[in-house]
Length: 113
Length: 113
Image (tube, rainbow over all chains, first blue to last red; front, top):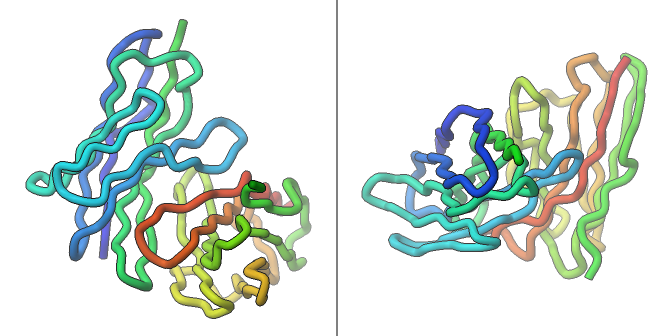
């Protein structure tokens, strides 16, 4: 079945630091790739997505590029803020019918002032 | 437009009891999925419904069940509650099965004592 490997957290960064959260996946077929974010006490929110190789998803300063050759979808942000403190989930999802989403274990990010 | 609404937000039940959780998807969304989130196991897929039919099921015992109504609202039921069922239960909706990504509710926090 599909699987996702995310870098272990928690990740602690100072404000304005550069962020990278690694994500690699195994999936049958050609999945779409998603990053979700979960703020404390809330459900998950779709952060960004990419649907084909070399696509770059972006939102709120976050970016991730669909790397089919390395089956990776690393999340990056050039300058993190305290408000970015949350748990980030990588999630491939196969299209075309009855395919469920596979979520990574989540990476907790803590940004300190 | 209104988001995904889950009720109740918090619930405390006793071992052996049963519980029903409710989810109202975004208007027009026909797919509803349920996830269990715990610190130890992360996000685990329970089931997905589309047009009142269960399309996918995760690896949970038969005590966990669900259904979807004609207006796309969904309920999940857990019978004979165990302490280990304490978790955040998240509902997510999407317009269709496939690769558009999901919109999550804020979840129902179930505590079994």
